[in-house]
Length: 132
Image (cartoon, rainbow, N blue to C red):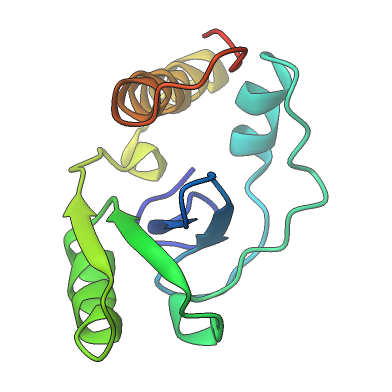
C-alpha cells in the first residue's frame, strides 16, 4: 500500500451522490503483495488490481478526490483546478518505508488499511460496509 506509489491509491475519486471509487496513484506501478495480503485478510481481493496513475484518469465527473500523500495532493489540485472537484488531503504513512521482518511490515500495512477504513466510514457512512 505505498502512498507515493500506485499500489495504494494516492487519490481516491468519488463521484456523484452514490459512491463510485476509482483508484489512482501518483504513477502507475505493480500490485504490491503486502497490500494484497492485508486486504485479503478482510475478504477483499485486490490481486487483479492494476495500479494506474492519476494522470491516466480521463473521467472527470467526480465530486471529490481524496489524496493520501503530498505529491498526490498537488497533482489532484492541478487536475481539480479546471473542474468543480473538491480535494481532501488525508495524510497517510507510507508502509513501504517500514523495515523489519514480514510481520512488522504487514503490521504497518494493516495500520494504513485500518486507518483508511476508519476515515472512509466516518466521511462516507455506508450501511453494510466491511468491518476492520
